[in-house]
Length: 171
Image (cartoon, rainbow, N blue to C red):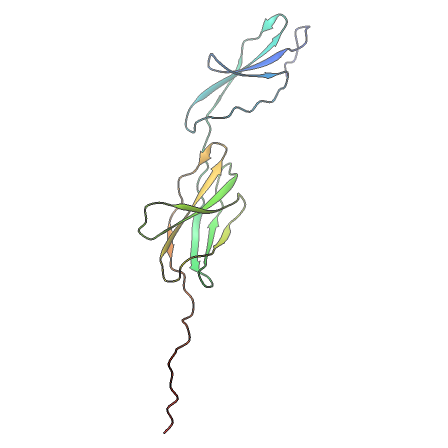
């Protein structure tokens, strides 16, 4: 809010990017601008308007930043068809962490769960024993997704079935 309203009530706050009008906040001093592109420079300014006109804009530069991916520390076979993952927390502004997997040699990653930003471990279930899987993490925030983390490969397994056809041969 301005230190002085110039003797007339504030009618509108206008947000500009450079010289381009972006949005009106009305009389609110809060405004969320969506659709921003990571890595794009924005030169924001805010004008205050009353019945006499609008001020020159007060400028501030802003560039949305993507989070840094967490680091996978371990991936180990858990119980039947499961893999346990542990990682160090992502840095920067993070709203969530995606756990992604693919079969070893496959091209596409599939997100198998999205967890809170504070999560540092997960158990992935429903895997095929004896098949090698690759895992990575992706951090997210309002600007978008990080690059994928380091990749770890693990093969889930379980104990074998009991033998069949065992004959009791007594002499």
